[in-house]
Image 1 (cartoon, chains in turn brown, green):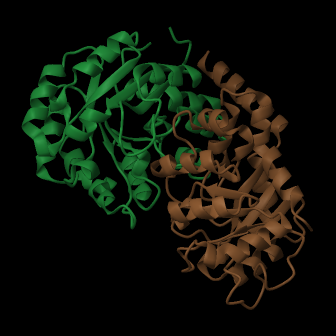
Image 2: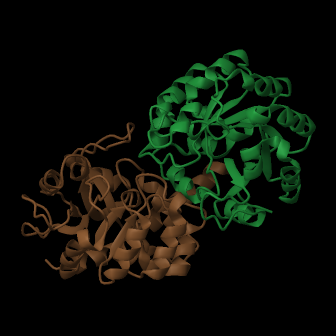
Image 3: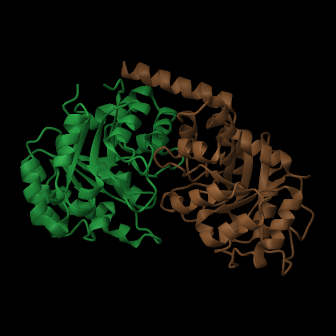
Length: 268
Length: 261
């Protein structure tokens, strides 16, 4: 009886996951930093790994964009995405637009059409998350209708609030890695209440009832599925959506609808 | 009454100041269990985790009864308040639903290999109780985790090999996992629970290949983590349904000697 129940629950989840069409904003190539148990995904196995975990497309980043340099990471992610069979696009790593930097970074070169988002690492790359420092990059992103991604561990909340308020046309995706976002949900939820341009990525958005709470308080259009592959298993965030006590249309938005919209809105 | 089947071997109840947690009371816990198909659970309230069993295990005893005997509980041994804890554990040892001891060396600031813990292990051995402890890997951003690395528990495991001992969080997300896996293979009564945010890619697939499947227990760490976050991780893992059944139910019944058929 137990095995039968498990079989049925598994089958129900598989069918719903296929129906929802998961798109992942948080897939990483390259060697993960700070997670000794995580293994790099070889680019030639990327589609297979995503297939196995029921992911049909999404945005891919490269660890080198943080660990080595934005330029190296941006080159690597484009190179590794070449020839991929899935609907996969790139997230580039960005820097302040001044002083202008050489190489493939947002603002200094024509942005390839595969790039559908920019992530910044203010703490790791040593610049403040302030208007006078990143404001021109924010305007550049708004011109292209391109979303900004940022790990919560790379921001400070007062500056994030100020940027989100100053640039309401900029879609900002707060990512719940690389440590628990749980300890920071008080400022996160205040930020989401006050700034409708802020969205949250779901790979570690796992506090009790958070998905229902955020859908109710802020709207399902503010939540975006992300896995943090290959560090995290996509089944974790996927399970939070599959089992959420919300209408299926809302699940579909979180699973992929919101991200597809963001990616498709980018001016090519 | 629940129509659930699974057993969540690691969860909590009660308010906690460290983060926003609006769903922490008994009704929230029971609803979360129902939503995830969980029939029974092993609970520790935040007050006694922080301050030890001496702060009072009566609310947990009452929870067991008022939950319809669904929520079993552990008594926390805080080495800073050892005497008060042992007194409270002695009082609780025959209470229905009391199934073991909880340790948290990182929170209590006393390393797991400190001799002060021997009285807790002896108590568990004398009364046929399990012990579950927080365990983690050495961490650059959370240095107190070095107090709970798995190998530190081996001193007492060797002295009390008959005690069912569960490494909570399976040694964490770093090198502690290697020791946790080694110990689950080396010691017959050492087990691993998968509570907390050890959300590693293919965690279940890797664990069932590296330790006996009888050694793995499903746990969520509610309300820190929603039980649903872990449920699909197990259900959709590429492992046999019979193994999922052991992880989600059978193993916890055996390890904690639950009075559940």
